[in-house]
Amino acid sequence: MTLEGVVTNVAAFGAFVDIGVHQDGLIHISQLANRFVKDPRDLVRVGQVVNVTVLEVDVQRKRIALKANGL
Image (cartoon, rainbow, N blue to C red; front, side, top):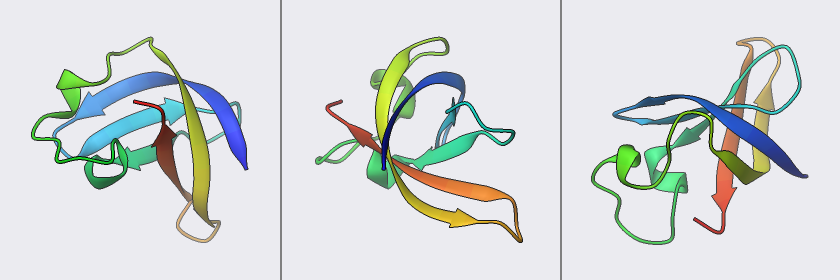
């Protein structure tokens, strides 16, 4: 599923994105681009609108794994 979301927080390991559900999803640093990314802040900023693909939803742990499209 492809969605549009807004970056809410950027950390050393990736970026959290509000996709319109109760829990923010995480784009892990390895899923930000098709190349090596040393610092996620080089690609995304808080408030930036991004297109993401949902990779996994873990209801029990309340986690949503995302992959960035076109960064």
